[in-house]
Amino acid sequence: MTFEQEWAELRAAAAERTAMQINSIPAEGGGGGGGGKDLVVHRDDLGAIGNDAYDLLGRLGKDGDIARASTFDAATALTNGNFVSGSAVLKVHDFWQTHLKTLLDACAQISNHLDYSKARHAKDEAKIEGELTRISVLTEYMK
Image (cartoon, rainbow, N blue to C red; front, side, top):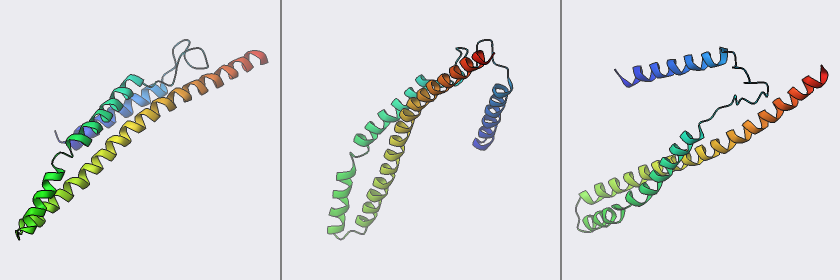
């Protein structure tokens, strides 16, 4: 099975689960401020992924930079010794630095975004719960 086929199957399954959740009737006590939480975010999952991204960021920052100085020194020495390969080694060095920085930025963005998402979802849940409680109180008052 190709990646595209597997990805398409996973997307279809997720869309089907979402449609079933949207079309289902909430269980007793769910929705309408009845105490059940309708907005569900698995914060532990987000936290674990965020922690993994943060750990990867730290390791990449340290381990990804180990060869930088020696590679640059080798490129300089080869160039100064009139070896043609000096410029090629310098290109490898520059290429590695560019891609390492891109990967470090991506890990930082993932970690930061998941931390933000976790906090934002908690605030949204509290806000929605408060609004539903007010609506419920007003509905009872209007009866």
